[in-house]
Image (spheres, rainbow, N blue to C red):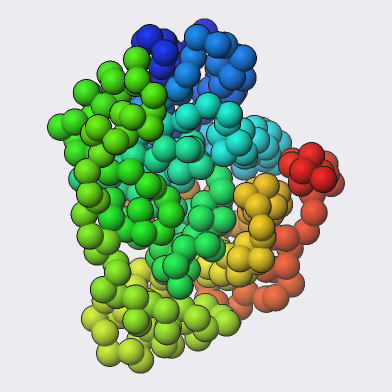
Length: 348
């Protein structure tokens, strides 16, 4: 049995501890299956009133999926990665619909797959150390794990900004964008989680939660809403550079370093997700998009540059936004031959 996920109960609380601190608790396929199995068992266990998710180590909850494994499998055809995505998104859906209070402690770095395990829970806790991000465009991928749903439904164009730049949100930003709802100071976390052993989750939140810091991004809303309302990534960049705002110029530089194909697919995914009434619809779309990305040059190349060779110098192909065709973007949204996740069918 894997020790990468530690499971235990403390009174009325069942605990999931992601336990790969040297890898910043990056998620393997076995970890996803173990967590889902535990959630299913605890849902039927009358002794369990609350589920609590935390991460081992001092750096954060979870940096996302084990993208080195994703890289290696994609080079072999991606069959293992497709199953990983399927099981990951089904777990994200299960967390969103969990019948008991699910408390996710997003202390420190919480990115990608870590967001999928936390930001769909009933009680999403951030601290002053929280750094929340959907960094997929850095590696030639598109925001997934339900992250595109959260980004698409964030106020104004804030989600578009964070989705394209892959920038990190502080605790106040995460609350503003709908990725979190509760702020607990780091110094109170141990007492807060201990209280869940014999107190209702809502009571513990009332006792230990504090006012979240102001959202740092809020004062940037004017130029963000104006620039990112454009219909294309090219026009967004033009508006950012023409705005005369230093932060907008910095955002343009951040976007310019990302995969042109992933950027265009991300914008299309976020715009489509705005019309989705449910997380399930967006997860189905994300499954199509992520599986399609496995066959692109940029996913393998992006991971190579970030975590394999670590030269931070990816050679994207196509190399420019102008070279990415509408047909290439449309390919990301083509239904998978396996029929998808089956989530929307279950809703019907």
